Image (tube, rainbow, N blue to C red; front, side, top):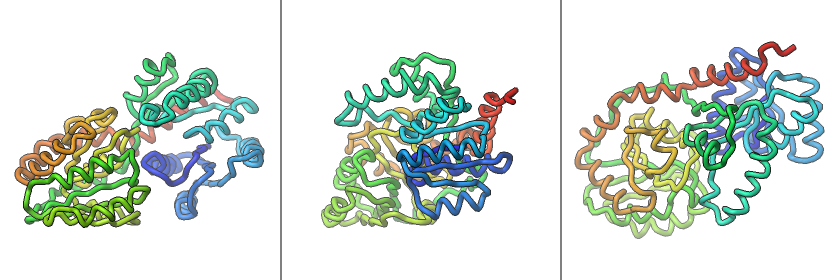
Length: 356
């Protein structure tokens, strides 16, 4: 039984849906979620995943207890605070085998940093994590954060990367054809470095044609509309909003430019590599782990560096591409959904072995 706060939101939810589809090929899978749309629910149910949307309320809590009693799952796996609270109740009432995800640590980037850290430690370190049977860290960076910065010394933590269908990798390098297509894929929020993104475009010195395609929506959409008219003449800034078929946009991009300020994992970067797109992003953790030597990096707010990198890509596209995509298959193999779903399944089996 997977309990998730969201069914559709970002990379974490995309990866969760892919994991559940893969696991459902060999297991009976139930999904409880609080927020999401019917499209993804229908998608899950077509794969044979039995899905329930519950309110985060007393009524939802009672219904989750009844569902657990009826279903009797071998393992309960939770994601984010609200789902963790339901998982905690199931652990207390039924002593279920409980697995939880640790996806991201963003407290250093919040104006409520001190308060959030206190709540995090009280709920997780001194309560919830004491009851869980396994903690899934999505990167080694998150695992090390928990062990050393967070101070929760335990042997319960396993690292399982987010996964994608790596078999879809095509090895097809794009042609430049006198126009560089730069893509931005993500929510238009502070986290994604919109300020640095705009400053970079305004400071491009190269005079050749650049098409910049922004796929995503959010708080800064109106700001981007405003700055469109201030772009250099050779820079065409297109705001596509939320797109249904992102793959059709990936197929035309040469560069993914995402000067993000913090990430838990960044599934969009692996998607870009699968589509033979050069990644230009911030030199922050855990992106050094997720991307390794297969991307170009600058300090997260150094727009001058990012502008220079885009100009360099235009001038030396073939050489840069060949260097970044050397041995790419070995790197992408770490994020194979089939392999990582099997790893997650083995963790579940290790908890249920011998259970009556």
